[in-house]
Length: 242
Image 1 (cartoon, rainbow, N blue to C red):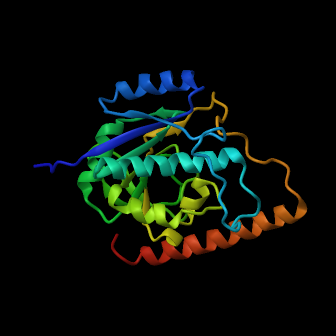
Image 2 (cartoon, rainbow, N blue to C red; image 1 turned 180 degrees about the vertical axis):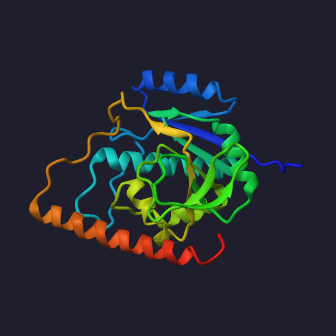
Image 3 (cartoon, one colour; image 1 turned 90 degrees about the vertical axis):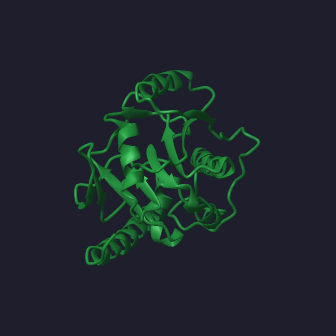
């Protein structure tokens, strides 16, 4: 008999992105999934505050990246206030390619020691942890998939995430790639039930394009060290139970 869990599903959407909202609504309503729209933070929002943390990254964040990060933190706080058990966070440029509700229900029922499961693109190199009835697998990967288009997180883990991200200096998707710094365990799903629409431009602002020589070298150094740390963690997890 399946246990009862309170699950909240939030779709992050900028007020001006009405076309995206309608497209996402059309897809989500077919999933028999109860969801709510969460008004995204923008650089013009009252909630928008620039972080004061010293940069851990190779460049400063754009205002759009800060707003995106704050939107996810807003979703986390809403789930805590609602006293639910699990939170599904979706961004409005998603393309649903699979039985999303069935998969998230099965992830919950698998009752594994995870804090978050990414529902988006999965790395090619992966280790199967659990096969689900829907045909997908919960997997561990050497490095986290980039983007935060969709994920499910245990609400019991959110106070820890909020505390560790009070000040930030990296985009939210890059932050989650360094999950060990936040003391959380993140897995992925293969094949992923969510993709990013190729027809939509970013509503949080384009990331900085041209980098100086110093920034380019900083990027190479940061990515190298981050990849080494992530792969070492993956190597050691391969010899222990999830």
